[in-house]
Image (cartoon, rainbow, N blue to C red; front, side):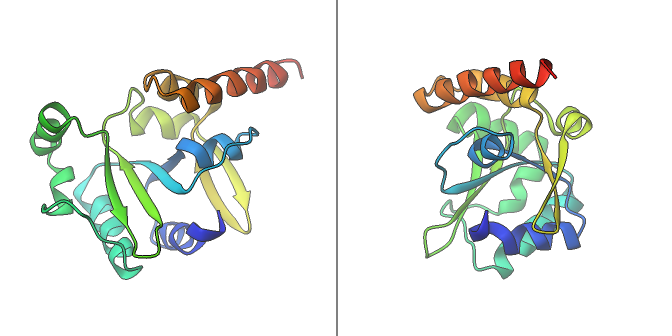
Length: 164
């Protein structure tokens, strides 16, 4: 998390509406998973996206696609990218290799994810982390081997937590 601490602190300070998903969420939920990027599911309102894009630009992140990042705020544009370009995430990169992925196509929508999110206090930052249940649902849809392994680990965690 250290790599992305400045971004997460800026999100918190600017009241960005997001939920951590992906490998970092797997780790924060109790499983071990090597990950290099920051995956977030966000409230897709223009105001929230403008905050996110401003923060990422200030932190020297850029997009490789020749498009305006605010295009993801437009539902029609977003649906076009999902259907015609098979886009699952809108990626921001940094010259040093860091990557922040805004998840734009997910079986769990932001509104339902935030309701069941676990709020964890990590290094003085309140982090909304997608619930184990929702994380399993998201990972089952990808079909990737590493996600199958994550699902297995998360189901074990869910069992252990249910045993309390």
